[in-house]
Length: 426
Ligand code: GLY
Image (cartoon, rainbow, N blue to C red; front, side):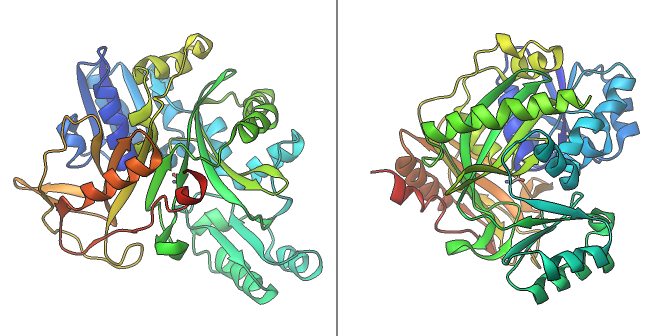
């Protein structure tokens, strides 16, 4: 098979690495890819939103399967564009990717189908939003831009004044453009966050192993929100009791709700869960693999991922026995100092150890590019250093040891990825 992967971050590198392990696959292309992905795929300089060019490329190269890693093209309808030309593609159609593309839609879906989530109201008028904040909201409260906003459209507001300023930022100043035309005002929830990714074929859902992300830039969950500074899998907080609750009230219920709405979902549903004192609640849905969750989940997956992608497309996921190793993985993101605000790029990355072809260490590239024969930094998040181990503590020790073997100017990382594990495992 010839496979095309759309995207160019650490998530897509992990997907490409896993696809390359499939005996069915003879050639992988990635658009646009990065320097690490170039080790397993031929990278082509086509942007993820250039649907016409991507479709033309897939036809010219007779691609058998296209896998879309990123949210923007999915929400923008890339799957519909490929299907319209008779091309096989893994991911939700536009009418299903709305599960991530519109927070107002997903909240209304959960309300309609009794899927546990925080109470909320949607607003498309700033005046109505402010009146609600003045008369009904409790603080802290959460403001969410309806549309995609690079993961930055969520504001936690401690006071009425902060919340009013947030309405201005999102709805009047349009800091995130049209994503803020509608906002969700939601009850603030406390608890531990867990990410659960799943494969879905429209009717059947198969869960992957759990993971936990670290979204803040600095240790102790301080600093600005980022795309994710590190992950561990499994989450020891995702207990059997939590799993049973979510299976009963959340996972299949979401798939069935989308089907009932005439929006059959095929692809990945990423459940962002909050484990509150009152039980698990859905914090958000994503319609694609998580980044950097994928980097710790796929190295633990036993199946041929191409078989699973095909089963999702063909509606035969019930025949797949999805299995994960009984081990653990930790990912530490090496970033450019200053991320997520201002940072410099173009520094040579020096790797003092050959990670390639190891089956317990992985270096997934996020923001890198080739400059002649050198690999240089080319983004805020540069590399995800992943190690596996028999348990989380071993995996974490291995991952941090591995971070010492990679160097570049302005290298920055959090030193407490997985620290919460200490409270949960012996
Ligand atoms: N790690 C969070 C996300 O992928 O959205």
